[in-house]
Length: 359
Length: 252
Image 1: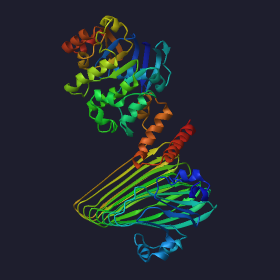
Image 2 (image 1 turned 180 degrees about the vertical axis):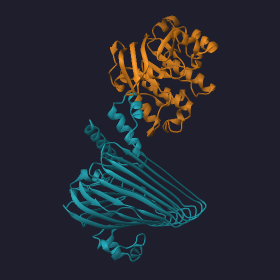
Image 3 (image 1 turned 90 degrees about the horizontal axis):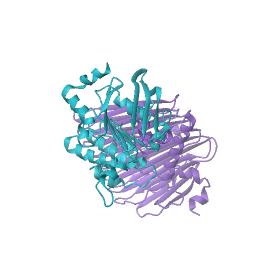
Image 4 (image 1 turned 90 degrees about the vertical axis):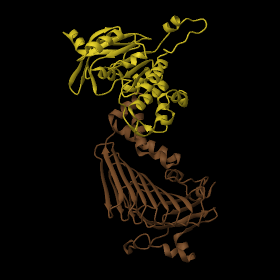
């Protein structure tokens, strides 16, 4: 039995947010249950993994990363804990670090503060799964990410919440020269309400940020999800892509790109698919150019599945349900994220459920 | 193989086909000609069973079974395959995945099929995304070869295809229809031809494809009526010389 299996019995909950209980293809694991850190260990040279509280006590330099990528908000109060992950200069672990923020006490407020630092020339992939075994609760996740010169951080976040959970993450990212930040966000069980607007600052020449979101809203859910990138140095690049599917819930997809220096390129793409009556998708793309020489574009489209496409696949022998599922899966384009199989199965299950309900 | 009786079809509340009768025997290739808007596409879309095309009268039989009210996928699984004239773009699905779906669980060598149509490099692209007219036609044929239907419906297979690729398409269609026969030991070509099982209905506006694929019978469709049937080459010559106006006279 693995450490995770010993500490948390709810394997199914973990699997569906991408946590591998056997840690087979992971180089470290952080697990927080409610306000308590229950697991925190890494087996990769050059990667530090500590709870945030511990890091602030033990590492003098950790303080420098507190409230620098985000403006401090005293109203949030004291955070309980969270994770501090650092990939040291030039280190490129083959496997990702995984973390899980778990809520198992009904009605609790989980407040974490996470810090991820990728030093010069290092590359790190972090998979974070946030989930609850309970119906009701509030999750406040504050995250600050720092990508130094030539570093690369790939951050995959998966949310799966109980029906009445409210989530308000705050994320700030600072990317230096030639650094790359990639965010993949997947949420198929949004709970009652999710509101987030992660913001990246590209402060060094040639820095890149890419945000890709996959959002599925069931009836009663409200998702207000956006990504904002300030292109503050020349030759920086940004891409914000969101794919939203409403099964009857409300989704607001926002995007805001601010080009401040010459020779920046940025693209914003919001696509929404309404599968059921009663749903709402509101795409709000914003482009802000503050210099003459820049190239910023956006495309947005909201609609239903074209009958023509369903029948095209049916003419190849797929049933209507199979054809619809294939089109939705293709639309969400999850294949490019390299998601764990458990998550793909979860997605298929949700699509199938929606098909059955609509019959 | 395919029998259509007294078929009347409405599209968007307007009657487009006014009583079509057609019999396509097993192993035969028939060509459907006619001016734009005469109802050619409507006829094969109705055979495939798409929702927009409402049958108000008449029946369609395939292999002796009444398929008039069957859903699209059941007809496909019975052995009806269509090469679309303008297939839709399906984002996020790779052409390779679609070709595998076409095989319906049977083992197919996707690479080998695509290789024959110079299509290998398109397998990992999203279905029809950014394809030229000719690339779409090749994509459709690759899918049909994996599907391997008994009745092949081709909607303007030559439109938008450059000359170089028409003969490539023609060869692929002949292979699909088991028409690329060579005499083998013990059997004459005549005997082999008699054993053909694949049938096809080819829509062609220009008739170019008939230089590569031999059709046994041709029809002319005008204003939702079949006005004539006969030797396809003869019909084509008449149309080339006098236009479809001459065919329209037969309506009166």
